Image (cartoon, rainbow, N blue to C red; front, side, top):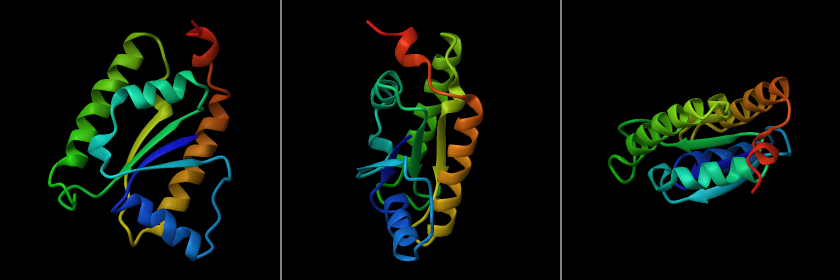
Length: 133
């Protein structure tokens, strides 16, 4: 599972989870981005095609974005991306968008745990084999 997470909020929340010794699944790979609004949909599609079971886009709560509206852009892009995934017959539920602030280490750990459990119920990502070039 790949997480494109905002430097200012979600990444700091992940750091707080680590400092607080909160456990979350080891299969989570965080990718720090300066803002969730900087997450291009092609990054998400590439991660899924390369075999990631799911992608978490983590950003600041609405109204708290350090770049004013980056998180709102991320939400709009994710909505369109999920619609496109659905249109081509792919499972759009493998992409999650969550707002996690710097002080929510516990929420970060719970979100990663919940997403991992949900993805385990779905089974392995089949995008890689079905869309191999």
